[in-house]
Image (cartoon, rainbow, N blue to C red):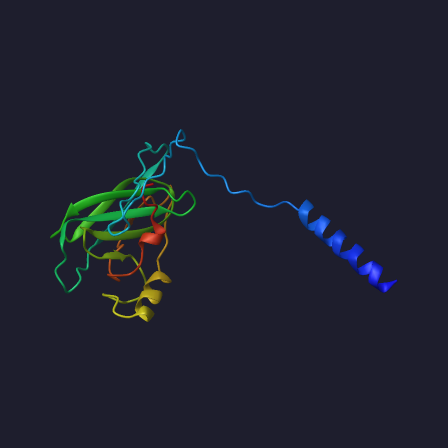
Length: 178
């Protein structure tokens, strides 16, 4: 009896396996065009909101604490990323400038980043107390100490968002172009 049951069980197992859904790879034909573009991540571009904000607007201002090494850059781009919408607003200043203001910001919570554009280091407004990231520990400390700035109708403008923590990995917080 045992020898007759084994082949039946084996056949049932094979039948059950053939009935389960299997993923079928799809290969596009030559007639199908792809909208996918390959974008270099060496110097990522940033998607800055082009929507005209409505309602009360505010601003964020601060200074640039330059890194000790001169940067291969033509300007400094400063970005404010809104926490709830992930929209990015920005401004661009000369590479030797030490102050910035991002105006026209809708009320909300923001984090602020800067980048010596196009080939320099990024920085951020943090509480880390680190001027330049030199170790992975510094990088972790800078990334985990971003300061959130809250703009409200009662307090629409913020001053003192000073940029430091240079050479951190902040591009993960800013949406790259597709």
